[in-house]
Image (cartoon, rainbow, N blue to C red):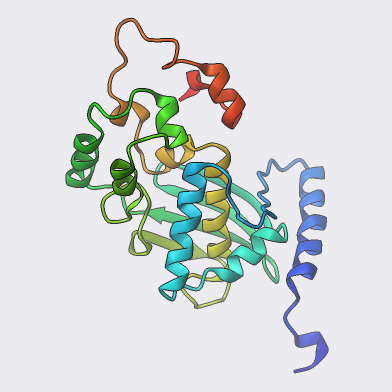
Length: 228
């Protein structure tokens, strides 16, 4: 293969991404770039659970490693999570648009999750920090019984010409979603269309200070409990 036909390295793609990002932002586009250069990829419970789940998917043969490299080299120029959907822009040989739709949790599975959580979660903060009973955590982190989406629940599309499933750009978006969840675990519940009160239950008429310790939540994740 001639030099001018070779695939660019991840470092070269990262440089292209940085230049394009600067140009797009200068032009007034509002983007939400995601970069994760850490070795473990996550440092909080739900982010770690997401990354561990992806690692198991890789061990089962799902080709996600190229996406991890794109993320680490700053190629995810935009990513947003919404109920049931991930949208993004990822730099490959050019900039590609990504969309990932998740199969909604069916009512039977959601009822089982509510039943398992009933009376076992004393606050929003405990849920967001993953400070729960081990058996409950195992259920919530199991892709068959909990909140993490199994590979067959992902429907990925990308404007690139790569026919692999997933393509590297969609894989980068999946890993980038985990990075966002690590920084703000409420995004996992948003993505799965689950409200915190679905699992914690209705707050008592007179709530305890622990339940609404906004300072604690802000220190841990930099988010405001009043917005959840």
